[in-house]
Length: 115
Length: 114
Image 1 (cartoon, rainbow over the protein chains, first blue to last red):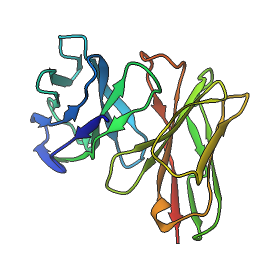
Image 2 (cartoon, rainbow over the protein chains, first blue to last red; image 1 turned 120 degrees about the vertical axis):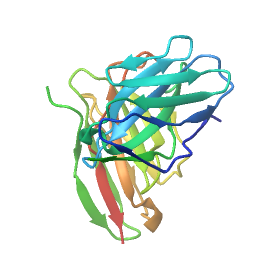
Image 3 (cartoon, chains in turn cyan, blue; image 1 turned 135 degrees about the horizontal axis):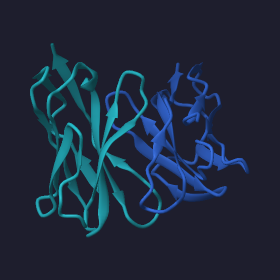
Image 4 (cartoon, rainbow over the protein chains, first blue to last red; image 1 turned 180 degrees about the vertical axis):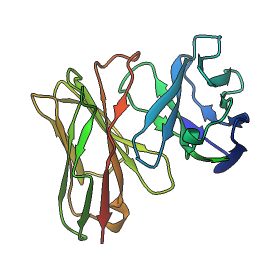
């Protein structure tokens, strides 16, 4: 079974600084998807960024980028120029290519932005 | 366009009771998935439905069941509620079943069992 581990329950960063959230996963599949979701107090899960395992190039979305290390099964999220609106729970998630669209989530990291 | 809508937003039930949670997907989306998020943890997959058929089931007891209607809306039913069923229940919809599709989440239903 696939597992996703986020070893940082909480992180904090000064506004405008850069922060990196860590995620490791375990799978025997060679092709899969990895995601970072943001969950603000409104509770709605919002997709931040997605990475296809067969793509070597790291995904980027504006201030958000990932460091995908397939051999190490590591998938970290870097947030540059942190803003107050980035404060939320962040979840790393894995999904197989085949079969049900089942997302396997990590335990989450609570990110606090200090003004 | 409206996003994924879930109802009710909050409810309180007593142990042993039954509950029905509802989800309306984004217009045109044919797939609906349900997740349980216990406080302080990540969401756990319960079910996926596509075109009214069950396409995936997580590791949950038979007290949990779901169905999808012809208009693609969905219900999650939980029988014989336990205190441990207290959680945020999230619904996600996708346009198709394919791997290269994004899941869009609703704001969830907060269930408290007392």
